[in-house]
Image 1 (cartoon, rainbow, N blue to C red):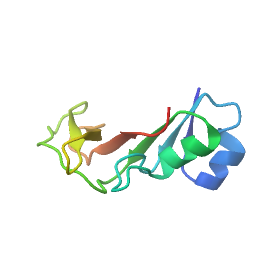
Image 2 (cartoon, one colour; image 1 turned 90 degrees about the horizontal axis):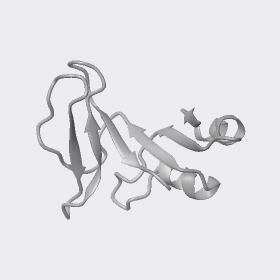
Image 3 (cartoon, helix red, strand yellow; image 1 turned 135 degrees about the horizontal axis):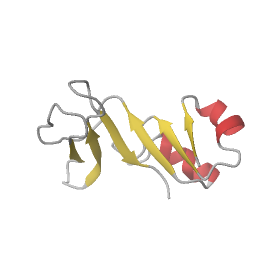
Image 4 (tube, rainbow, N blue to C red; image 1 turned 90 degrees about the vertical axis):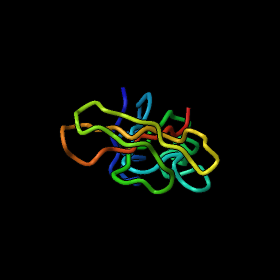
Length: 102
């Protein structure tokens, strides 16, 4: 079972207890230093985490389609894949999904 965390403090107290993993609204690895709040939370708790952001903090991607389910990879300056840009609904801003901690 994955817990959804919108606030880091509440996550420790509520969602993380007994969870098998955590999906966190925040960056995971798509930061300049490669460690965002989702990855940090995973390191601290020892739980697998996934970062879901509303905007790109760093990186570039190819053109993304307008339809639900369209996705492209997000690359850092060195060309490494640091996440996925995913259109969750038709014609809305995409979500930025990045790996946290496993």
